[in-house]
Length: 361
Image 1 (tube, one colour):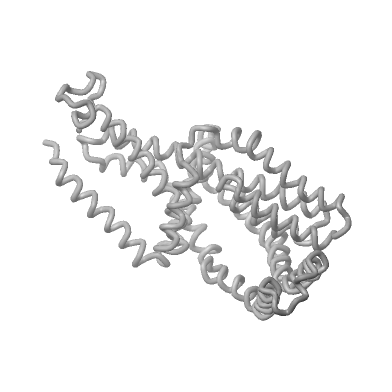
Image 2 (cartoon, one colour):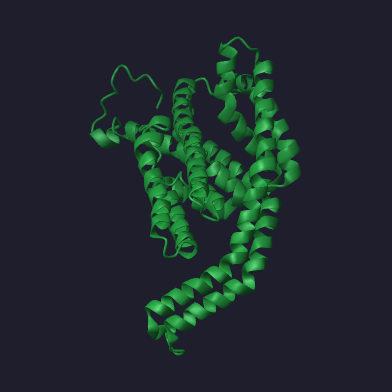
């Protein structure tokens, strides 16, 4: 006998509250497991392909783990030290960059020399704040990164968690499927498949897009001679998942740095601007359509709201779970809307649904 709708709402509401309470209380504890699960989810299709090629699950997982370890070592030895040094140098150079900008504005707008001018007062106060906080900001950024992403966690716990989750992924999925309520198993499987499709298209696809565009921006800007090209490329690539924001923020930052570094050399400044124009063209017409496709079904505004809400409530862990939660809610909302259009509340009569719809209400 199917449970009444009221009882189902109560049970699922309690489950949602328990989920939020676990995030709130055990956020720092379960963080490595969430990260490890995300890595395992991202790499599961690779393991499946290796299995189809003839490898066992253990061997496929071992090959993937060794490859990821080699990539991590290469990043630690080659990229991350350069990134940290450029980030520190950029923050240290912020007062000098601001001083040059202030001199340029005064040259273009002589009224700024008036000490009583509101704009001049604002510029001076901003410059003093940057000068006073530049060193502190650099230390705080690095310290915060080490505090949030603890080196021990990511070098020991996360790889171990991701290895075992990837190894047992298919068994876990089968076990969860066996625990589904029998009356609703077909519907839940269909919804889970749709959620997985959205997540696969967005998470795996957008992460690939971020890596591709971040690498393109970083390499191109460094070849163009921009002093902090690696930092700008990483920033632009990291926020590319929000349409136009990555190119806009990265472009403004890169062109601003290029104006300071190449002032008078308009050809070099134009090259920097052209890099982001080309990157935006490639993102919209080549990279995103080929990797992500057009059937994600996760609107950027809905994603931005989910990231903001969960990030403010649960911190870094909340931002990690925001995307799957947003995808799940989006799928459930579309499912509820489709059921509503076949219900008496919408049609105005008590006629039963079409014969092919055998799903329980």
